[in-house]
Image 1 (cartoon, rainbow, N blue to C red):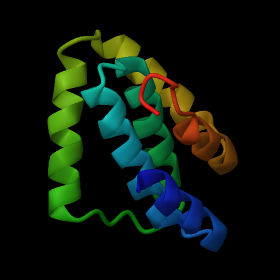
Image 2 (image 1 turned 135 degrees about the vertical axis):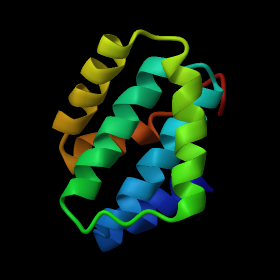
Image 3 (image 1 turned 60 degrees about the vertical axis):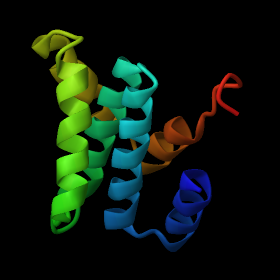
Amino acid sequence: MLVEGLVIIREKNWQRGIAQFLDSFGCLAAARGENERAARLWGAANAQRSSTKPTTAYHERKQREEYMSLVEGKIAAPVMEALMAKGHEMSSDDAIAYALQVDATYA
């Protein structure tokens, strides 16, 4: 469902929606223990959000914060910041492609 939603949002070029989906993919990566991937996706989401009016619903913010705290407990703060910066540097298309990479283990 996330994949289909992101594809539709990309076709409509809705930046705020792209940011929300990238956040969701980041949370999914964190739940899978893919901490570095999660941090990059959250950085990419921040970049998308910075190009629009940064509005995020309370429940979305809360979910992201919960998963981020899990990741922050597993990797050092400077590493987290560096990974998020790498995600922030991604173009919208690169971030979407990165989010849509599906590991065969989970397919």
